Length: 364
Image 1: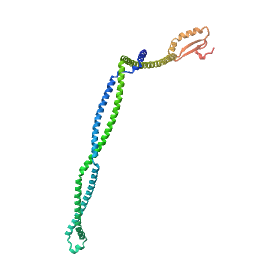
Image 2: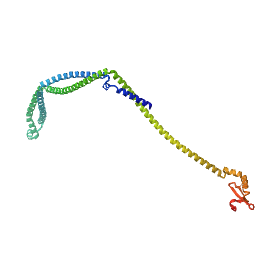
Image 3: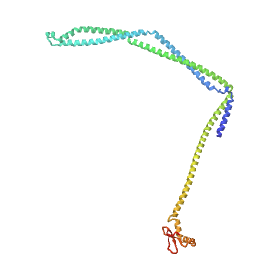
Image 4: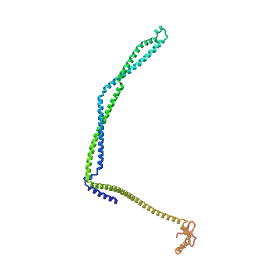
């Protein structure tokens, strides 16, 4: 407790010395490290800004080229070409499907004609036979089918040639590249917008950092002008922190000791109470022990085989003599004890009578 009191006094003294330092310089410290830190940050911001400006310039140049390309590229023409190619490819597929269909018909007609040539029927029978009639009809259709098939093949070749002249692969490639460049333009626009936003934020950070640096330089000048007083203040603050720490430790220890003392008081009180109870119990025990010993000795003495009875039996002649001495001048009869082994009998004897138990006496 004395240590805690001494530390409190020392702490009060330090606080008085600290409060004596002028308030206008008390808040200033050596700002060289902070100045260096913010100066490095400012240089980094400047370097980042230069990189972003260069990147922005490159992206702007590329975007200009892309815009020139997109303006000069007639995408509508190639889209029309693509639509024309798609229409012709659809028409070509229809022609190919028609060729397949007519080739199947031509094959069927050829099979029927071959069967007609191989038929073993007579001329009169052939004129009436439905199968033969159908074969003849197929024979007549053969020319028409052949003409239609040739026309379809001619159309196929014509349409295929026109499609080839339109160069579908080249048209598709141009269109794909155009939309790829368009996507690149969109991505580049987003990148440029992000860069401009970042550069705007960097400018704000530069202004903020420059303001902080200006304030730090002013504080540093004030610090240098009052360096000795401020350094003394720093020493006092360090001592105060050290003493405060020691006081905190001392207060914690003091509280712990007080708690231990309180616990000891409680323990002593509890032990004293137990001691009192044990003393009372001991006194009660000794009292009961004496009572028991007395009772035991009494029982042992009063028992037929006890110590007193044994002494009385041995001393009966002497006892009877003493009784006789006492009664000689008082009464004319005798009183005496007789040993009956298990008990003592008291007898009375008149001069004219024999001894008898005293309870059978005359009562005189």
